Image (cartoon, rainbow, N blue to C red):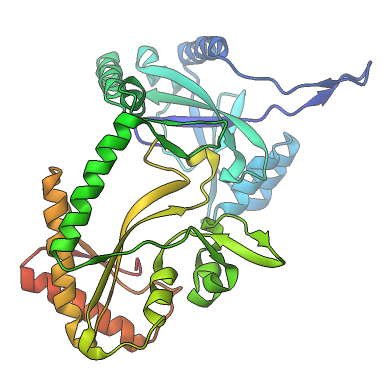
Length: 379
């Protein structure tokens, strides 16, 4: 199940013609197939098959899956950590692994409140190194009136989809010839972006930030020293070789600002240093997760690092929170939730550092009188 619907994945591998030895390409589902499938679904509903729940042992489930030749279901079975294993069957014709619950029979399902929506490609388990499956998305509602309301909502949302507006207003594009998830800002979009960036810069300058610029790549050793390579390499692009050395396109700006700070002998009397950057970073995202400007592979982030004394920490956090509120409110964002994310299982730094940092965050929020929650282990 997903928000407002469900999906089911199908695998059609290439086959070989036994008589000619020719390769037969995998079958591609189409909109016409969706209509045929929906007709068969309606027939099953009309026959009012009982939907029967059955508990089986893990070994029994494995034997049943192997008998019908479903290797993907074996992987699903292995991922189920709870007992007992449950299967649901529709008459004698079909069964599947499922936790349930379900209605008592297919006749209780409203034909006219179920709609098959679209077909899309999806890698098995979201892994681009695995098989490409075909995914049918669908939605189901209590009655046709609810489905009609949902479809009307989708139409209205489509009109306001930022991808549609971006193209219609000639603001930006994503050129597949250049690669997915990489944004091209057109002249009109660039004008809007420039005004936002100018506003951002002035807001930071007014709060005594210095604006800095850093490179887009660095020697891989830097990312190993910072810990990013060990903790974040699954979100980084592969390295490139430059004169027998490995270089990494940056997924974030932190190590660069630290290098700049180390570039000279600093006095505690000069602290704090507040350095802000509109830093363009690149992060590896699977193609199936990319979505307009919401999920991309290259983006420019509002980034800053403050170098300060421990006793200055809470005051600096208060300043950051006030600046954040000022910028968000200018764009109409007035309602949001605040969460303090505490130390995760994978982390760097001593217990004392984490305790001091958490205490400063709590102190800053309490000083401002802002309500907040706690995200245990989410830091």
